[in-house]
Length: 283
Ligand code: PXP
Image 1 (cartoon, rainbow, N blue to C red):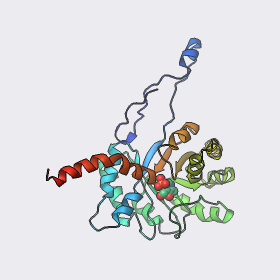
Image 2: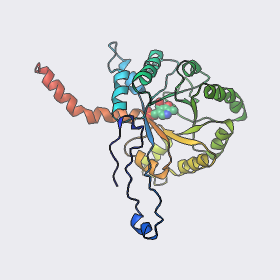
Image 3: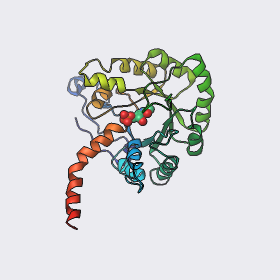
Image 4: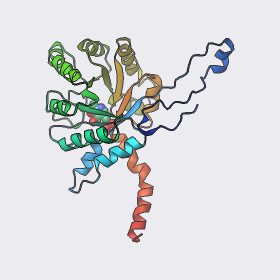
């Protein structure tokens, strides 16, 4: 099977008409359906770039530059997760990335994650991103570490939030653990999508658990039945992503930061060292 190289932003369907694995068999009876290989869209989370930048004062690395490189390389969108303590993405980053996408990548998606009850809604209102991913993270957590518990009280709090964001024209996605009753409540709430919290999947996969994706497949299938689209994120990487996409072929989007930036360091290190060796020779 073969997939064309992605066009800028990966926005157009880049899939070649592939040969269905059953083509030869089915074509005898003339009933071979079109075969679409699974393909989730990639939103690059640039939080880690901002984390590194914030340790110094010269705006290096630059989140706009990294966003451009990501989009030029085929990412379909950029994700940020501004937190109240501004430890990585700062308010100005949100506005600068919004401006970049509006002016240079109008088809790319902007996904802003955050807790709608803690300094989030003003971004959504000002920027009107393509997607608002609502996350129940408290201030003391180093990173999002669980999905919403959609209790009746939380549903009551979230209902006007979801409505307001949708009124702004943003798609609303709720960060969820892979639990069927939570998926059902998200559908009742009127969310457009759910984002499955995949850290437990990544951990189980790393342990060699062949059934690591099972709860995710079940939750994703239930979401699909209820008309919700499905995203996934957290600790996805080059090893655990392909099997997840194969098992949830209708996965709409994955947002990836930590492993992607770590891989960029490793995969880009040799060329970077070569350039510094040349620079040190004043070349
Ligand atoms: N989704 C959500 C809601 C997140 O908070 C994060 C981390 O900011 C991610 C996805 C991306 O996770 P990772 O950095 O592990 O790829």
